[in-house]
Amino acid sequence: MESLNPPIISLLDIEFSNLSQEAVLSRLLARPPQARFAYVVTPNADHIERLLRIPRLRGVYRRAMMCLLDSYVVALTAKCLGLPQPEVVSGADLTAALLPRLAGQRVAVIGMREAEFELLAARYPDVEFLHHQPPMGLLYNSAAFHAAADFVCEAGAPFTFFAVGSPVQELLAYAVAARSDSVGLGLCVGSALLFAGGSVSRAPVWMRHAGLEWLYRLAQDPVRLAGRYLISDPRALAALACAALKQKLH
Image 1 (cartoon, rainbow, N blue to C red):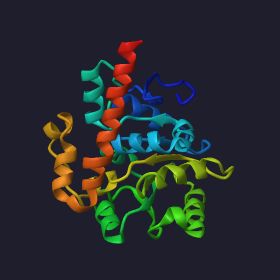
Image 2 (cartoon, one colour):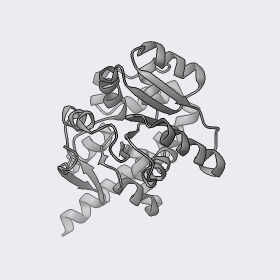
Image 3 (cartoon, one colour):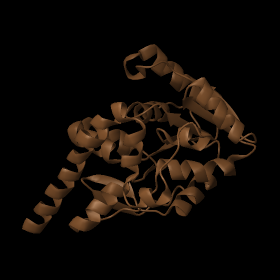
């Protein structure tokens, strides 16, 4: 299944895999557990803004087995502007659909505080979780970064969830993929495991599909998220507007 390249839609020069969630799940579950390590990225508006600002990160996303759009805001904006609109497969929805199908399997988790991880493990008792909690500032701590990569390789789990925030999780997955002793499949899903374990509540489905999940999350944690949702993310939407204008002029 993996040898079949997924259909691609390019948006702001980012190549998104244009697949439904069920199609993504089928590809992930069909992959042999001992296949050479590959990873999935789920960029949202925040990721897109960072990729526009730091182009050298694009190679990390291009190296991914699949690049899934994790933003109804971006998708709806693209649609309104007449731009290509990739399927939305959020990391949180994908994680929630995947975890029940991993009963009896080893699943490595990079990130999460111990209490958060215990809630996750209690909710999915049939999954054999392996947990590694790296210190804060992982991107600037070479020893801790390599220790996290070592943990993934030594665990050899069919699935590894990277939950250390972006761009650290993508860079870590990229580093693991470069190693010859790495197997399995990595998913860069940010806060998805917090939702899956019940540590953090998610917005109602109608808010997610209306592109309003950001507002729900902003109300939960305004100090941490205000800069992202009110400053960074609008830059990605402005870039979409510029791309649409250029398309019309040409």
